[in-house]
Amino acid sequence: MTKHPKALQSNLSKRWQTGFTLLELLMSMAIFLLIVAPIVGALITSQKTYRSAELRVSLERNMRAAFELLAQEISQAGLQPSGIDSDGLGVPLTTVVTGTCTGTPVTCISASPATDESVQVNSVSGIYPGEWLWVDAGPGLDCSVNGPCEQVVVDSVIQGPPATIKAKFQYNHLLQTINGTSYPTPLYGLGQYPQGIVPAGATPSGGSTSSRLELFGDLNGTGNSLLAVVYACPNSFPGPLTRTVYDATTGTQTSSTNLIGNVTACQFTYPNPLPTIPSGCGSMSGTAIITSVGISITVQSTMNDPNTKAPITVTKSFLNIQPRNVISALYVSCTEMANGLQQSPGNLP
Image (tube, rainbow, N blue to C red; front, side, top):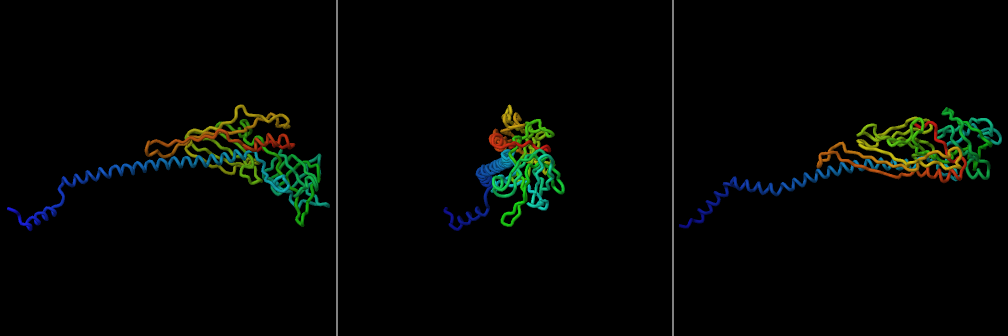
């Protein structure tokens, strides 16, 4: 007998109200897990890969910044603190204190060929005993027109106050007045430093070795400071690569920074054998110099790679960074300018 439509509808309604069976729920959950599990797994893998890449990029970024600074300072090593002005001699290291210029005509430095003349200057930054200086009569083309320029070697430096240098001068140097403005005698840096990358065996520091790079010059390009910088590999691994800055004329430390942390290998390399200054360059002929620097550093992360469960390791190497001013000193100053090769300051770190 056929059921009445109302009775059939009533039975279906009752079944719908009873919900899913346990088997149906289990099957639904299984299908859901089959769909979601790969997605979750992909997300976890993606997060691990992202974190791993982030750790590597951080290492690479820190090493790149350190290598850029190191390469820049190697390039600047040996540079005399001077810029360029209308004289062609450069920005002066210092000038004579105007108030000490006396007489008629007004004289800032008096000739004293046989004895030291004490000269008060506005600063002795970048000046040290044994350094050769250009002493100019004033601004403009005075070397060839208005008065003599001369080279003098500094016999002594007094920090002061008042800041004073002593040297022997062949000429009087006059206060110049141009368009109503008075210009005291400027003193310029002369030549360059062929040992701007300090070779091994230098005193008192020991110079550059496989675990240490020592250099000096106008490293930051200010035109009035002579800085020495020491890059040092860790004493024990892992450890930091450090950069320590000194005043090259006094040996006073001014700052120290950990450039790269967790270094596991570090080595500086130099030409072997070192080239030497050729003959015809006065007292510096035959002196060993460093004309290129190589560096290799390996760093590991302080955190483990999420994928490998081990630290990430990155190695970077520069094999031939050339100190352009050292090379220029050899091929220009040695042949074209008397006393163009400066002796290194006696107070290097």
